[in-house]
Length: 337
Image (cartoon, rainbow, N blue to C red; front, side, top):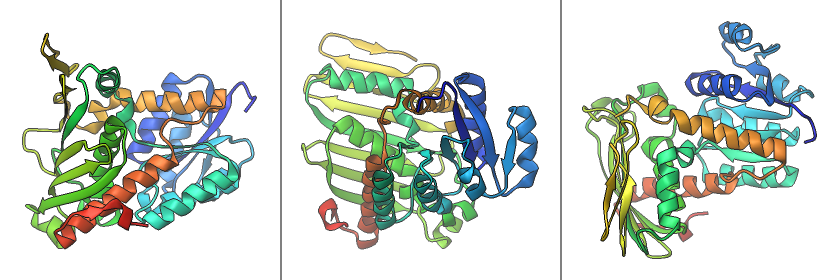
């Protein structure tokens, strides 16, 4: 794109859509928010707040708007794949919140359509852009802890989402753990071979809805790294996000978030800096940083670092995890489509 100012449309103005809308308006003067779209017409009032000229009730009408260069898709999961496909066929560059779809087959179809239409695509794995995560990833890549042997991830929410949300979001692994799968793959820098999960359901309403709220997942990577992921939908002491990476020369990781929480322990030193309420506050900077990358890619014609291939990889692992607990056995990734 050669335009000085990139024109963006935002589809879906719910909780996440409002975060991105606010960040675009406050932090990125190089772009113009051309239009927003939502089925709730009451949200048209946000056009005045953010100096937006157009409101569309239909996402199709927003995408067809020839003045728009790129779209942010922040709608419910069930709409993602159809909106991505429609946008790609109209040659719009795309940022989409995770996941692309609840189905692996559909996600692969989306990958093929994106590649065929040669549009930019970025998936919203915002934790990759968290300042603390960037620090520990750098420690690992620079060999500060030697050869990585194990990864431990803790991800616990303070309260479960609504039952209606649970029924439509794909369940714990596709909605929640998918972020942890992506983080683990990014740290391990390898493909997952095997997945095994052990689960429990404490909340009777969640169990009745056909989902789980507590899980331990083990990933085995091609490079022999082992990762364990501990998930809970109900952590009475608050939002708990931690990661520990153990290597041949030491360990590093991220503690629960207060201010900054990275730590490094090896044979020479112990270095540690000392919970946010929920993901909106915990990952406030990450949301800004991921949008910075997307905007930079639009301006400089670069490929996003987190793309459709990562979306396919994470949904494949999530589906394997789901199969594992249902069949009570390990699942090899190569057995999935």
